[in-house]
Length: 72
Image (cartoon, rainbow, N blue to C red; front, side, top):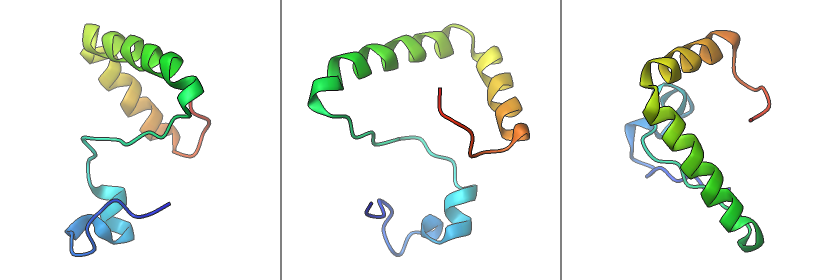
């Protein structure tokens, strides 16, 4: 997969990618799965926005547990 960061970007080195917060994700979804993916993202976004404190705690717990686990 191509690096989405500009080569001169401070966060383009390996450590920068790990430390830099991400505001935008680009997800590639097959066309046949697009309606389901949109629905899932809409539901997840609504759940996160409905209870931001719980979402923040879950993110902290996941980070404390370590990365590399399966995605939900």
